[in-house]
Length: 195
Image 1: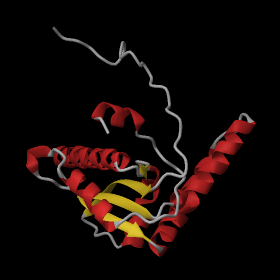
Image 2: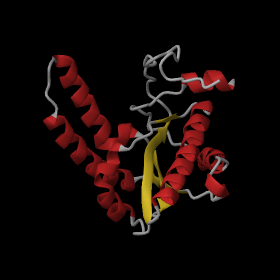
Image 3: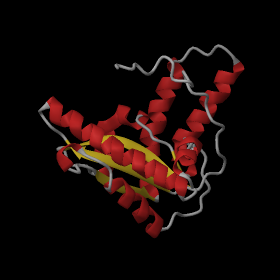
Image 4: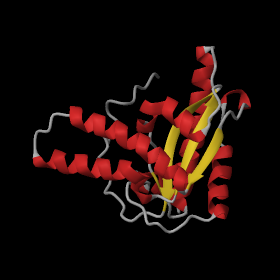
């Protein structure tokens, strides 16, 4: 797909077919992620590829987070009730995705190094989600599960010297959301030209 079209057509998918994603395609995506730019070319990212019963364990943690969140939200109309139910369904099994990918970096005591590695891993994640869209696969860049990062560390046996940057389900979309309008679509407020 032409790159500019790809960027504008990628969506955050929350409903997946149960059809498996081949290991070959997962490796293609991770290879694209691995080619991301990184601070001082440190390439600090690591990836956990989670499937099977492990997703159920991740989902239990995420569902607890979403239940707490939605119970604290003031519901103003029936649309929000439907949204909350859909959110809970998604959280209960990561939208039925057959794979979940977790992006990790090493923890740093130096905030500048920590920020550089977070930015680098975010670039890798962006490469991953764009490459997935190019193969007709869906993703949903998630940080919500990190509200229970300690729990995820326990579930996935992540070493104490690592932190989670992001989580994404991966699979073939059951449906593709409509585009969400851009805030400031003409970039009149988001760009400052210094000439």
